[in-house]
Image (cartoon, rainbow, N blue to C red):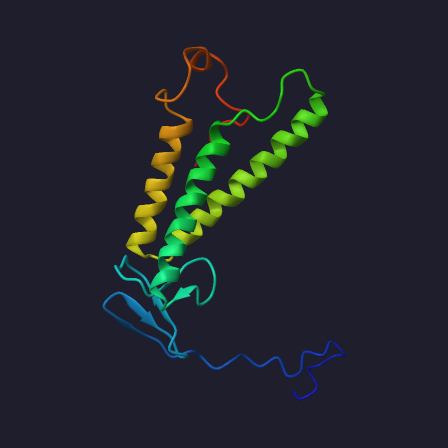
Length: 160
């Protein structure tokens, strides 16, 4: 069946050759020497969020940890902030809430994807970021007594 193109520019539509892989100490070795960890590991040689970032550069690894920490703190801030003023139009306030929700969920997914690098340092700074963010913005430690009794935030709590 050489003529399987049918005018769609797809050529012969043959299946690609299988990738060779082997499992060693919980690490999947792929054909192109790409390593994908399947268990938590310690080390500064990792890929967090983007291909080849931070890579083998130790300084950039610490920048990536700071970035993940900041993302987690930002998620907590968005979960407990009051940015929308009372008395505005219901439609405008509803659209603003929806936008805030989309940003919060997007940032939370970025933190989740960073943790999926299986790097223990990334996991620890993600948890630390959420913890510090909650301490600063969600707990009663830094709130005035009048703020504790009011509605807590513009957004409902995140659910799993």
